[in-house]
Length: 363
Ligand SMILES: [Ca+2]
Ligand SMILES: [Ca+2]
Ligand SMILES: [Ca+2]
Image (cartoon, rainbow, N blue to C red; front, side):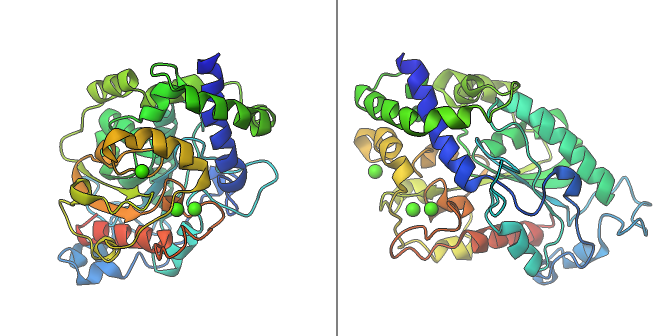
């Protein structure tokens, strides 16, 4: 009983995310996920790879770029891989995206080769990764590029690691945002691996309130249990053993910290990104959805987290630090709401700065 209703709790959290946040306006399907072939971006011009970048790795409208198929170099198309619960489109809601207004903001800043493919919202990353791989192959065929860069939020980062492992020739870099590379204690509770009576009661109420109606929207192929297992202690251990990093691919990560936590030692980065540094004294209040889970996972040692994922669990590859954001603020949800009173964090600016840094590095 606890296991089932706890799972539904996460589902119901997801339903809030899905119904409010996880639809996509611009593209009803990935078939429409077309790109514009105007300039790539302006930020590379100041980087050491500017000359290379301006050459272009793929042909625009088929005009060139085919000759040097063996030499791969950026700038690469960027794939934004959504997390658990993310829908490209959700019934009736047509005015929000998972990465809320990020694609348009990047386009406004010259980054026009941004793709937001949808995968099964509730499934393990082996399944989702295979779907992402198929999308990436389509993107490569469409653009003529030979690799992509994947920026994954939450489970999207694990999906990206699956593709990088299985098809390393398709991926130049994987940058993960609040991805639970070390799992999330919330999953252990939801699956009944760890018990938490207080959470269980509140969970039941949430299920009664919002769980059942949305459940019908989830297709036959999906598996909430598989998705949750992915983040559990045993599940993530299996995942990390199965999908080690591929040589030659650049891996980096960053994450969010909420509940007014400044992050401390856990958030000290391997690499300083100016935008992230500029927010180091800014605090974020926890989104109401995550008050319960935040309290559960921060445990007895006040471990910094974003409400669903602990900072320590979000590190993978070169660590770029923490922004003041909960798990939905990171992607501008819900509906572009303010991340919290007094919090100047801007998720769109974050994604632009992440992309710019990748471009500076020749991706
Ligand atoms: Ca806390
Ligand atoms: Ca928010
Ligand atoms: Ca917040």
